[in-house]
Length: 323
Image (cartoon, rainbow, N blue to C red; front, top):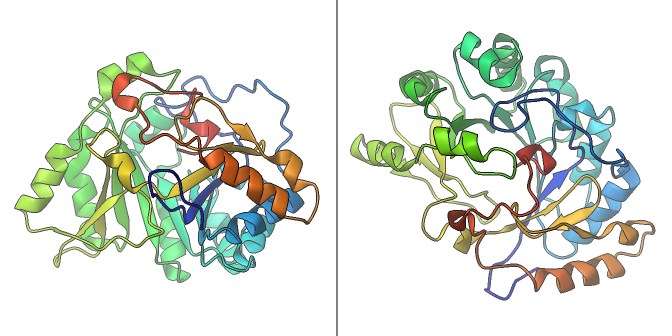
């Protein structure tokens, strides 16, 4: 089992398979994707070896992310490779959902267990203003397709922004009253490229948490492979509400996840100062070198992300590692 110097155990790997994204979200890529490196992303064979190496170290859950992972044509094969890895119990993915309606069946058939879709507004015009894409109706139809296909473990990721969607909380609550999904409100995080935007738009999730407790919502039990969200449920609602508050006290004390970039670099934290290359250990089927490297690098993991001090590390924008 992977364990750091602070006693935190790591059951969960967030695996980026590309840093390319086709959306232009105002808090992440307002000018669109700008490539500053060779697009030498890990191959299916490398990803397979990576998944096997982590699984043998106790990893039980892999989340496939990007950029936008659905831009890779071999995505179903990647899902299947992760799902077929001995020891991996859960394969999840985060996507902007641009081709969800057309491709969801392929992903489910490949073994996908759960899916997070980014939706920052339920107003089509506001959605387009945030993302640069007029895709909301298609994405919502894709969610219906997933539900009817039996993929019921669905979450919607919503980044809170003061001027863009903070006024839509009632619409989101009305949506989850009838729809069996979890809407997760995520506090906007500062990155290397969005400092001014962050200062203007950051909203604390504390107000939402207080309202949930006042209105009879109850905190659910958090599985050991769960991400950082605190999830609440209510008897009158078909779905749940989640909160991700990275600036809250002790947020990092329950960290259970590591990240690997599409270029084969281990990131000990979303806001680590650098990625640590492990790609040389993915060239053969002997996982011992990979595992030794991961264990050695894990000794350098910090107790916290230091976001409160304005540290954003090497993360220029969230598309680098999928958040």
